[in-house]
Amino acid sequence: DTEVTQTPKHLVMGMTNKKSLKCEQHMGHRAMYWYKQKAKKPPELMFVYSYEKLSINESVPSRFSPECPNSSLLNLHLHALQPEDSALYLCASSLTRGEKLFFGSGTQLSVL
Amino acid sequence: QKEVEQDPGPLSVPEGAIVSLNCTYSNSAFQYFMWYRQYSRKGPELLMYTYSSGNKEDGRFTAQVDKSSKYISLFIRDSQPSDSATYLCAMGLGQGAQKLVFGQGTRLTINP
Image (cartoon, rainbow over all chains, first blue to last red; front, side, top):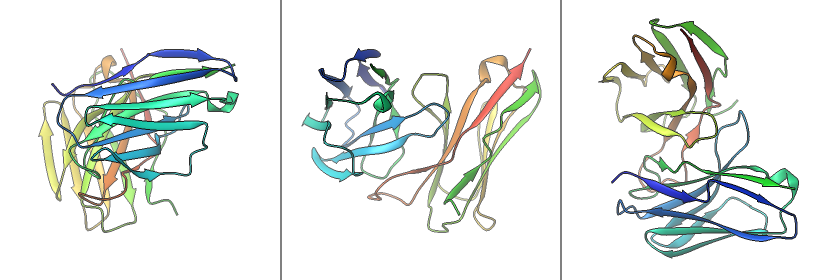
């Protein structure tokens, strides 16, 4: 199993909503990541969890709140987002931090 | 100067052609090199991973790394319309490093 599973695939939310993105992997990887990708741009790192501890926060606004309940799961809680936060949100995992990444298929988020 | 430079294209070639995609980099400390393929609104898929200078072949794909010139390439033989996608190069400093560095991505179209 070399799959990273993300749900939902699509999400439309208003600026006052609270929603969560979910990510799961069963490859035994100990590093998990959230990336944000705008159209025609490369993925932009948001957060890194290494052994279930937050190791990198790339100065992301507090309206994005990551959570790593266990070594297989990663969540991204969203609250009071802005229209400019509309993007493809990608989860990825690697065996340990800094190694080759395996990406999920992403959540296409639209903020109205 | 960006750490990793990649021509964004777009690149359009006829079916069956040999495609050459390239990235240059400035940081000689990069230890490993990846190519990802990304279809529209999907997550990047790891295509090739190399750890040293030289060539690595996988089916119709060949990855080439020249550390002395700080230059990497991806060759696609017998290109197919299904190869139409954005190709991202990515580089890493090694295990434990903070993050991968991505190129801008090259948009490739294979015309039937």
